[in-house]
Length: 161
Image (cartoon, rainbow, N blue to C red; front, side, top):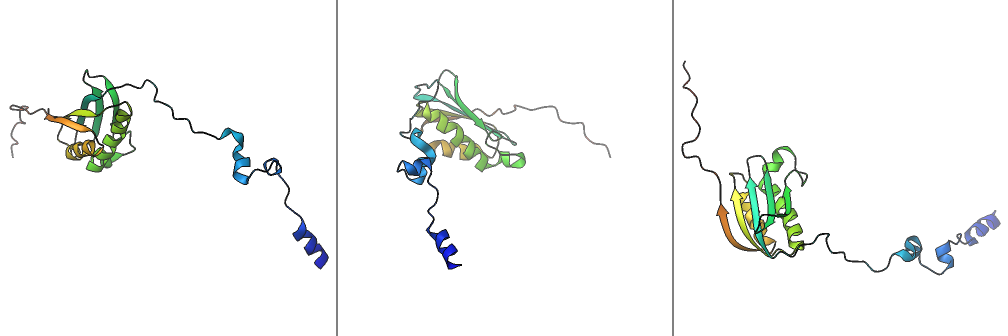
């Protein structure tokens, strides 16, 4: 009985092709195809150094778009695109994530200076502006273009009790 145990212990594991060639386990798994990592430039990459960042902060969502000075969109994002759903779309944290998403794409196209245009009464206004600054973009000016009613809509008729 001890002879059978000894024979099982002495049997070497079966050799694979990679091990037969003298390669380690990881090298034999990936083969010769893995070598240098190629860095690819973004498709249709634009060299834009100056642009606008438009932030629309509503009560339910936050939209951000980075454009060049002519108004052509470089990158955009909103809270729904960043997988926020329902009431979480209107939070300040969602606005922060949205600006980071759109800002990194815009910076990969060469954007360095922005003029921020803010519109709407939402909670994401301030955090979006702070996030643009924390990304490393230099801010030329901040413009608020929120629509203000000059008398508003006609009110409802008074309720009779």
